[in-house]
Structures are given as C-alpha cells and as structure tokens.
Length: 165
Image 1 (cartoon, helix red, strand yellow):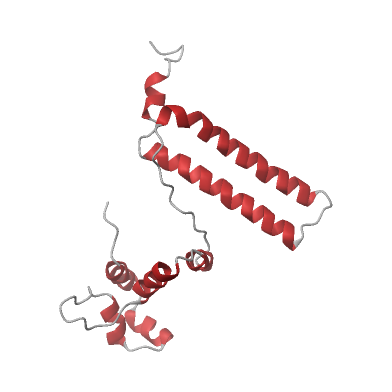
Image 2 (spheres, one colour):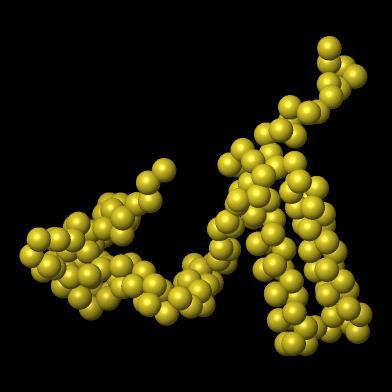
C-alpha cells in the first residue's frame, strides 16, 4: 500500500474543511493554503513547502521522535513505532506471547506499587507511562507479525475442535 503524499492528505482535508477558514485562522493567504495541496514542482523548485513536509524534514534531520509524540498527544493519541519484523513464526511465537504477558505483569506491578499508598506521584506517573509505552510497543510488534502472516503456521498446526470433523 502506497503512503499518501502530504499534498494529497491536505487536498482531502481541504475538501472537508474550508481553505478560506484555515487561511484566516492561520493568518495566511488563501493562495498559500491552496499551494500546500498541490504536488511540489520538481522542475522549477518554486512553490511553498507545506507544513507536513516541514515536520517530516525536521524529523529526518533531528531523528527525535519526541516531535511525533508531541503531535500525537496534541491529536489525543500516542505514537507507537512500527516494529521491524524479521523473526519467523515457530521459534518466536511463544517467546513473543510470553513477552506481552511479562510486560503486562510489569505494568501491573508498577501500578500496584505506585497505588499502594493511595496516591500517585509525578515520578510514579512517569514510571507507569514508561511501562505502558513498552507494553504497547511489544503488543504492536506481535499484532504486526500476525497481520503480515508470520504466524500462519499456528492455524495450520491446530488440531480440530471436538465439534469439528
């Protein structure tokens, strides 16, 4: 699946949200807003780099994921890095499942320790967040492997249920 280009995303956004209103709220010209939704002119190098491409360039030059995490938080979500899946199914499935369970247990331990005195300090809150982020990352890796078909052999090796021939 091809990733959308920034100008394509902006074009779709501007179909649902008035470019005129966006221009007014950002204090920019309407023509600038429309330029953002156009493909970059590679031959002349003219035009205006849209804000999405600028954020992408900032991320590439700094390699600092806090930029993406901040944007995700502003949007009411969170960032989880896509896993690199290169491990095959049979040897990895059980350890992967165990890792998810262990991460969840670790999170519960941090929560239980923090809540033991009926209050959560800022430091404890940060520890809970760190364990939660690790659990999300490990689980996303597992789910991604499943989606890519790395665990297809599991269904092939399952024995039929008693109610099935």
